[in-house]
Each structure stands twice: as structure tokens, then as C-alpha cells.
Length: 324
Ligand code: SF4
Image (cartoon, rainbow, N blue to C red; front, side, top):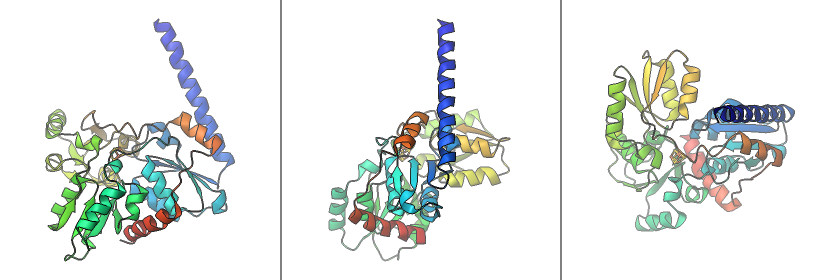
């Protein structure tokens, strides 16, 4: 029995190596007309093979500013992340074909606010400025004044005149953090949350801290207030990468999705990183893998489509954020 398992493991690893090599060959043969982008929460093997890895803001910026050798219409952008990220890439690159390896990789947080619910909230609060976290559908972005990410949310809210009421959707934890940081009291915060970050509790952090008493604790603002209050740093994933690089500390407890450990360890091989809890795994972020990435490169699908009217309205809210 043990022998069979070992044969199967060898078979699996040699077939995934074969797929990896085929993807590398496809990248080489399509250089200049193919761009693979991966979010920091993707599986290690996807991050390893991508042309660029980053957080939501970095992926948006990179997609917006990428100058392609090919004609834009011949360009294929593969977004390895969840669906709203691929929509954002499609909005910022209207002439290119944007594909996602697994089109069912949605984001439960993004699904917690719909166009209808936001329209209703706007009706109840005429004149309020709608600030929408990028973890939202293209339709919701199209109904917003400005987008934000976890790395620029404070700056975005600070850019809004203080006499204006703000509607912040869809993440209640990020909204609460921004409200506290900016002391903006006239802020309506939608009751959405990221199931992965929200399940991290103060008890989990206490356990991690007692196991690693010398470690610095970094928490993502999608975590609950009780967790953020225990953090040495509250930061987005790009912020955490910067802290890990620049801090003299040798050990870090990481309060965000497990995928970030790949880059943290790769960029800081002499430092040690501990996930704050094994609960910090987003199943949606793990849906893209080498097999479906390979398949989508061969078929140039599934294509992410955003209707033109939604695209142009959502683009305004994203551009407003990029300007800030
Ligand atoms: Fe959505 Fe949270 Fe998963 Fe990110 S980690 S994709 S916010 S559910």
C-alpha cells in the first residue's frame, strides 16, 4: 500500500512538472503578447510562474500601465486571483483579452453587496460619497464615486471633503479601521466581511504570540477590531512585505491569508514567518492551479466580460482612486 502511494506521488509530481514546463514554453513562445498576473494569495506554484505578483492595487496599477509590444487586441492577460480582480483588469485594459483560469473563483466579501442594495443605500443618503473597496463587483464599482484598496483606503477617505457624508462598502472591518484612523464620524459602513480574515480571533492571536513571544505581529485591516488592537502593524499585503524587508526583527506572525508566506519567505530567506492561525486560508484564492492555468492558456478562455456601460462607469471610480 505504502509503495503504491509513493508511486502515485511520483506520478503526480512528474505530471505537474510536465505541466509547469509546458506553461513556461507557452510563455516563451508568446512573449510580448501574454501577461500572467497573480495575487499575493495565490498558490505558491502560480506565484512562481507569474510575470508579476502583487496586491489588488499593484495588480490594477500594473495592468493599467503595462505597455505591450503586441497590438492591445492581440494581448492576453491571465489574472490569477478572484473574479473581481479579473474584472478590474478587463476594465483597465478594454482592448485586451482578460482570462481567469477558474471562473468560479468568486469572493464572498464582494458578493455581500449587490447593485440593488447599494442603489437603495444611495437613495436613503442623497449626496453621500460612495467609497467602494475594490473587493466588489464591476456593477457595484460602477455605482461608486471612488474605489480604494486596503493599502490606500485611509488616503482615499482623507481626500474627501470633511463636510461630506461617506458610504463605505462592503467591508465592515476595513471601514471601521478607516473610520478610526480618519476620525470621520459621518460614515455609513456596510456590514460585509471577508470570511477568511474575520474568522481570526483574539484567542488565536494570543496563542500565536505565546508560541512566538519575540515575533512582530502584522494584521490585515480586513481582520476584526479585537485583532487589529493586538497588532504591532496594521498593513495591506504590500505593506507587510515592506515591513518584513525593512524591520530589524527576525520573526513575524502574519495575520493575513496564507499565500503571502510564499513571498515573505522568498524575499527574506533569513527571517521566520508564522501564520497567525491555520484558519487563514481562502478556498476561492486556491481554485486557480497549474492544471486550469495551462488549460486556459491553450484555449485563451474563460474570457472575463464586463458590459461597456458598466466598464466606463467603473473605470471612473478606479481612476479616481489611482489619482489619489
Ligand atoms: Fe475575498 Fe477574503 Fe478570499 Fe480575499 S481572502 S478573496 S477578501 S474571501
